[in-house]
Length: 548
Ligand SMILES: Nc1ncnc2c1ncn2[C@@H]1O[C@H](COP(=O)(O)OP(=O)(O)OP(=O)(O)O)[C@@H](O)[C@H]1O
Image (cartoon, rainbow, N blue to C red; front, side, top):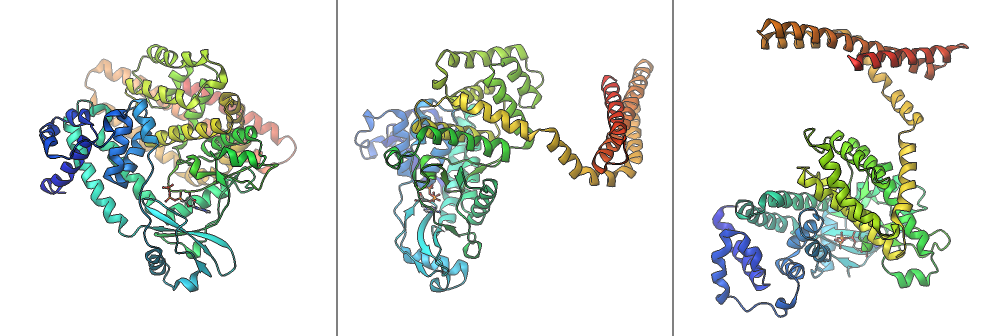
């Protein structure tokens, strides 16, 4: 957007902020200060603004600015490592407040997208929406085979609206980045990029359908978590047809009690389902507020959750997932030294960080929590504090970790609502240990080795050439860099050791391959012992080369 084009938008935002008495925000960005001169021209402050706390005033201002700003507020509410808790709490309550669009328009969009008349697609299509939000609205329908479904339809013109508001937000972000005294900490442009990414994902309903399908496969039995099926023949980028499910919002305690469901068991199940999504499947629902997590009232004896809205899903890079799980275990065991080591080993912190200082900082954050009864400890709160500490040590938080932190807060919130006495630690610790035991078991590792074996065998004949080329490159690079004879001698010695270490490693790998082959293929009596022998020599070779 050209600078001139954004002026009206910037003025509108500034005047709404001023009307909600958010002068401190306007002050903070020096450039806006002259805009305070506008105050006499503005209508007076919004009624009641003075009495509201600052978080509530900001939430009201964002609501007035429109749904895309509301989304931005929701994203900001998850950055508890950046913004004060009182503001985060208020922003987390933000809800879309947009009127529904006419059902006849929804019908036209469906017909255009699915290239057929509505009557051919559905036996019945209810033009009165079931629910309406800022990006899409949901209509009830019935397929010709009699299945009850819901049809989610994107709002008309939503893409353009989002593009316009995001451009405005980016301009505001650039101003804030330049002028806000805490710009380095808050990194407003990163927040805008995060909002943009989130909206981009929510704009593709085909992607949402694919996420629902994957989650359904991960919880195939549907005993603990039920996920509606996707009707792919009636789905496109702008229309999603899902099996219609029934239940009540997870915070509808009265209805859950009236159905005679054991809330304690349900709460523990919720925590378990969350850990399974994060650490077993590495694919988790990242918008798990009670409105999107329903409880199936039909299942009294074996209560289960029903998931809705798959627009925001999270998954961690595999290595982060492993490190995070280890961090959680260390946290459960109050092993702060290990948490500090894990942060460095995971590459989340520079290796130059002083481990003792990091350990002390982590202890300072966590120890006060352990003076409370276990049932009152919030794991989510501890994680938020840990992230805040980590920022002091220059940890750059990956967006996926932020999603995880948000989900943790949501799940804990739902858990505590269902069972105020829930001891999150007692429930979570054994679940996490079991998942990790299964995930990193010898059998799973062997299965992974077996899967990759053909790939390794295929590459094996090229190995000698690759090693020779690598060694040549290292040697010639070093020779070019060194002129001093003493240094040259030292490097020759180092190169020799490195070469021996590499050869040791190769020898070990070859023996490991033989052992695996013997193990998998089986063979004459005694071949198990030969495999074991190969394994022992391979380990010896690895150890020797590691020492070198
Ligand atoms: N499969 C379904 N079966 C029954 N009702 C559904 C189903 N999917 C969605 N709904 C209804 O539509 C509402 C909105 O759905 P969903 O959350 O997917 O839309 P959304 O546009 O992402 O809304 P929001 O942004 O408010 O979460 C749900 O709260 C629920 O009432």
